[in-house]
Image (cartoon, rainbow, N blue to C red):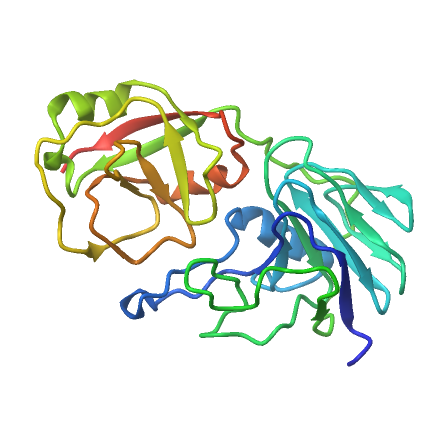
Length: 289
């Protein structure tokens, strides 16, 4: 329906369409992508009556502003931020009705990095390889939003949740990554492995959806040269020539030639979506090769 659409009035620093991602295509060079904070996206979809894997909007730091062509139910969550509807303050983290033509303003995050906007019916852009997610590395899926973009919406399938408040986890004050060492920890000196697992790093301002870059102790190599490219997974802790670990996130490359010293437990990765530059990062070994 033509009236089931969102007009993007202000796109913000980086706002993308995200869902559960496109699993199963790494052999074609396509990463999973999808929401960096999948728990937030799933919960917001439930609040507005969508299937949990419906496409939502993922904002970065300074939010966005949207105007629906018809009345919709929305919920904004993830990183806490001010929300306004038609110029008036509206609740964060619970379902809200936005009348046709009213302006929904998602403000700058007061903590964390990425806020999510779920809309009844879901964002209904054309799927690519079974997903509507924007992949910043490969370019698959819709382009990051720009001012003036019009996003089609699907038809609502369920009523919004009847809740007054929902418990939301606070953005992390510290990231603790539980890791399995390897497969290439033998490319590093024993001192480097000890540095990784006992010292504190910090999130770099260069962190993005591809990888969480860190600042801190430099990891020294035991071997010179580079590996032939090999497969990479989400959570791989790759160490480029500058010696600073990079934790691969949703839009990571599927192959790479820099050695991977460890792999982060999947359950720990969602917190990286909300870690601001300067957040302390610790790596804790749960298993060795």
